[in-house]
Length: 264
DNA sequence: ATGGTTGCTCGGCAA
Image (cartoon, rainbow, N blue to C red):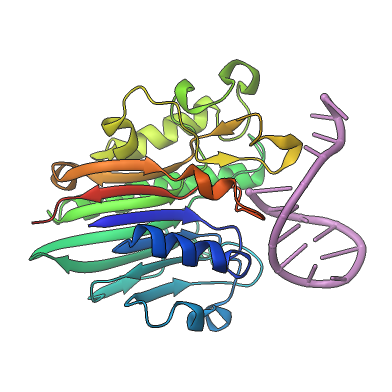
């Protein structure tokens, strides 16, 4: 079971790149973030006939997440529970599905965690609350005993190796101690960073700013992750960051990431 | 380099 996860930064601007990715990688599951598109405006026709079932949670201008699945989608949920932390949250950042692959049940989640803009800002508080909600919800899901994968743009670089210049970036957004603590607390419900487990010493980034020629200078962060619980991790066979998609013409500012699990 | 670039939408915000 091959999973590809990608923050496309506008699905309409990334159709040809996504078509190439599907052709080259033949993923069984595709988890997308930052569609910047409403559900009824999604370019469904472009991906017809490729054998995917869809769940899309979209909104105008911002956010938007999706899952394409070669397996029939047995259940789908488009909201992360609030737990009283953000009862009016209507941002399209979360989609969760249930599929069966080789007689095993897999719960698969695509998430776009808020960026937070600046440490201490209102948007930052929203980000911190979002992590608390994720942690509570994933803790509940863990009790189901299913294979569990949650992947997406988490907007936090976990360790120094995931930051091009940790000293320079210091406590800036996506790198601060607050955010690392939130990410690690979320992981502590029993989720493993598939890339880091598989490649303990590899410094590879998943996002490079459009500004200042950041990609050309490899000034990036690893903020996109495929997390899996221990049950799923026992089946992990391969991980990668598909950096070449960041070097195409008119790229997303994120590279797709990949994890492959042996299901049979 | 407190700038810079891209996307959505058509001025200014978000990242």
